[in-house]
Image (tube, rainbow over all chains, first blue to last red; front, top):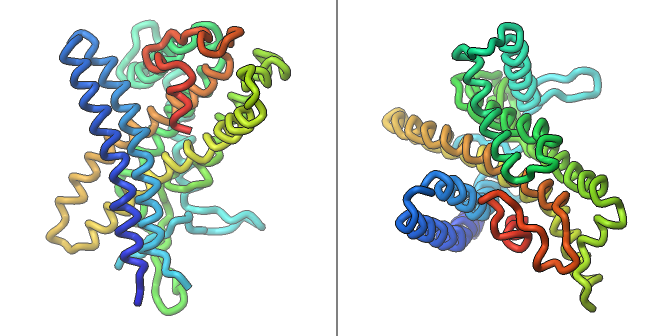
Length: 75
Length: 270
């Protein structure tokens, strides 16, 4: 039985949990901050995008592993 | 299933050196940037025209951020940061042009024919991103050593506790690992974007509009990833040259809003 597709699915599926939570927390805090201090919207937004991209990078690692699993057939 | 190659394909060879399609794209990006800079410099005026404004805007934007993060040494390493930003942004956006990854020659590879494109996004090759990451890591180590002196910089790894050897080792490994995290982050984002487009295109002609939507997203991601790579490189250098007080906890607070959290928070990405 070929378990490689299952492994790819698990890799990206499990790997997306953490970054998803992380980006959710980052955005929710940024929204709170904008609500409290709308004048700082620009600065908060750029800091939020930076943080979200950092969290997203973890999901990208998982996605890379999944892509490798899908497209590179094990010998 | 469409063919996807993780590494860049060799297009031709000059002597013993294989020339890959991402190398061609890298040279093309450099040619565009250098040509644009030379052209704009020749007719630069006090009142900028449109092209001059286009180049001055990102440069000033990055300069403001670098100055805000490190008012003392920021101007010294701004050329590196600015060049990184412009190069990554141009490379990312150029890879969205028609012709990238689509025009090439078919090569018989075993039983199936494989398309070898002439151009491949420069940042969708781990070699390119790893080179840039190594440069930025070497520069932040170098700046730390030049500013604090070899002994002084080594002392910034110490916290004055019994566990110092382990902490120093962990910090060193963490700092070296920044090479990997910086390069894989950029490579993964751009490469995954390309793979997603290839997969949606292979769904058939009915799915023609979906890749178009993803290209709009890719424009955004290209900008964000360029900003993330440059901001992180800048933060690493700024942290390395930062004055460390006697107690690590109350070390000099950085002036930018980006690294308000101090060393503890910025250390997380590595």
